[in-house]
Amino acid sequence: MSPSGRWSNSAFPDIVVFPRGRIAELELERVAGAVGRLLARYGVEGGARIRVVGANCANGPQLVQVNLRVDDIAARVQMITPGAGVVLPVVLRLERLIKRLTTNPRLPLEPDPTRRPLAGPGRGEITRRKNCTLLVGMPDAAVAVMDAMDYDAHLFTDAEIGADAIVYRDRTGIGCVRSRRGTPSDRGQPPPAPELSEPVAVDLLCGDGMPYLFFVDPVSRRGRLLYRRYDADLGLVAPTSLRPAHQQGAGGVTESTSPIHGPFGPVRHPRAPTKLPALRALSAEKGFRVSTSELSSTRTAMEEVCTTQGAVDPVQGARAMRAIDRVLRCHHIGAPARVRLTTAPCADGPMLAQANVVFRDTAVRVQVPGPSGFVVAFLADRLDRQLARLTSDDLPRHWPDPARPPLAVGTEEQPIVRRKHCALLTGTPADAVRAMDAMDYYAYLYTDAETGEDAAVYWAGPLGVRLARQHRRQLPELPSGLSLTMNPHATPLLTEAEAAARLCRYGLPFLFFTDPRSGRGRLLYRRYDGALALVLPVTQNGRS
Image 1 (cartoon, rainbow, N blue to C red):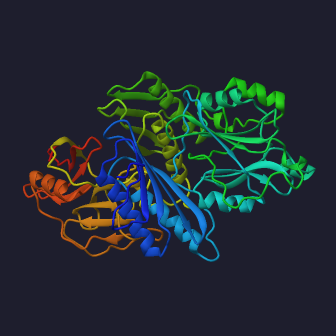
Image 2: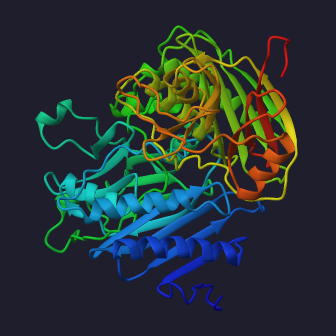
Image 3: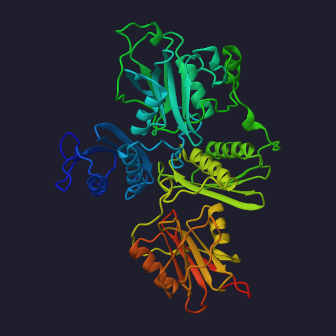
């Protein structure tokens, strides 16, 4: 590594990595190689600058940012990963961006199901101020910049009315909010941004856990964008000019085709509901509306139960119950949820969060790892998406899932610390896939109703789902709307010790095998703590 902190290797000399924190050189080589091979595959020249930021503990998450030019367009992707050795989410995100920018006409920007919102209440102070020359243009030009730079919101000046505005994306699509209305015909559009002082804006964002806040500075009358950073502090984007665009002459705000600002985190709707009393008072004073539709349901009180393992702050548990309660209210679910939070052994390590609820007589579960300051927001967002997908046939599950890559890494042989004796579902592959999806599993063990043998479905293959049965390897008849591939290999006959050795040696996230003594199928998988767990069927005598 050079004295300036730059790192590169001879295989990809134009890929320059800037590490910060506890980053091993092997990890730098892995990230540079993955990005370099992807750029070579798509013929992207000019190299890239990569920033890798490590957490304060050895097993914490990493922030990876890639900056490059694609067809002379400034482009960037940024993503948080579970930790060292997990590069796939970054590569997949970069590949999607390159495909969009190199397709003529450019592929439209779509809702991003993999982006996690940095939405969580907690203290924060502005540690970075970005004074930028704003793009002056139409909203579609701002959306193009937001897409290329992998932002979730972008501050610009609307050329039509001369007012500062933002474009943003969330799971519902693309939206635009201006700092003021231009014409009376805009009455049906979202209300303009509120006028707030900087301290009040910080209090609102931190108090209600918003990932960002677009507001108008009362002194300069210009729009500003306050956002939460991945280190839990705040950033503020402000225009360099002090006068509104509609008051400037030719020497005012200049047009820029490559602004370099925008929040890292995801964007909620600018009218995102809040329960903060100060915001309600301001809304009445300033005349902008705050939606309360999220609070309407049959639930009368928080009935969630939160269990913890490790050194979990009680405030974190209360925050998790409030976040899950809001999601259940939004989906009009009256049944209580069970939440579990598990901390890593090190103080600043990642946390594992899980939520279970019954929805329309179906058991629903989500589980996600993440930094302790944001894992509650990740959990609430994943549960919200899960419930929305289960109520709509138009929202497919995306695989591979960059938000939660599989635990696939080669290690020394690990012990089996948990055995789960289960009465297996007897049904079709479609039944098993629905159960696997609802429970947010990587793989699911069941008994195939057609053949009577044990089988497993799991997320893999070109169609997203793969089926493995103990003996028969012919693809069964499938209902319309379900596509899967068949595992062409015979299910291995292994003892528990042999299965554990194979899983660890080859870095498999799970292994479906047949027990030689009982002849039944078993599912071995890796836990988030690195140990192994085994799912095995219950027999008529009670246990396998």
